Length: 167
Image (tube, rainbow, N blue to C red; front, side, top):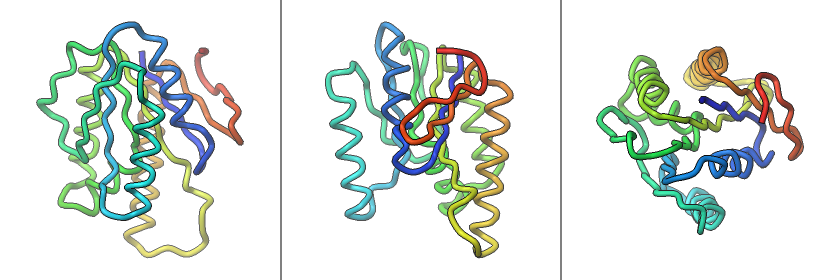
C-alpha cells in the first residue's frame, strides 16, 4: 500500500504520516532526507525525532541513493520528505533520473510506503531557472507517485482532505 501525503509548510503532514505508519504492526523505517546544515534544519530534525519517540521507528538519515537499503524487514517505510530528496539530487551531485530511481526503488521494495511531500507551487512569484526546474521536477514526481498510490491525502490547515483511497 502506498500513501502520498502533501500539503503546505506546517500543515501537519508529518504528524499524519507518522500516525498512518503507526497503523502497521511491526518495525517501521523512517528515512530522513533533510541535510543537517543549519540551525533551522537542526531544530526541525530534533522536533521530528521527538515526534517519533516511542513509535517503534528505526531512523535512517540518508539524503539520497537508496538502492541497496534493505527494506524487507520493515512493515512500513516512511519517507520524510520528497522535497528534500528532490533537492538533494538536483543540487548535490544527483540528477532527475537518479531522483526517480530512488522513488521507484522505494515503491518496488517497501511492503507499505508513506511519502510526505510539499506543495510549494504557490510560494512565490519569481524564481531562478534552477528553482523553477526543482518545482517542476517535484510536482511531476508527486503526480507520478499519486497515480501509483492507493491513498492520496492533502493536508489543509491541519485537516486531511482525501483525494484518493481512504484511511
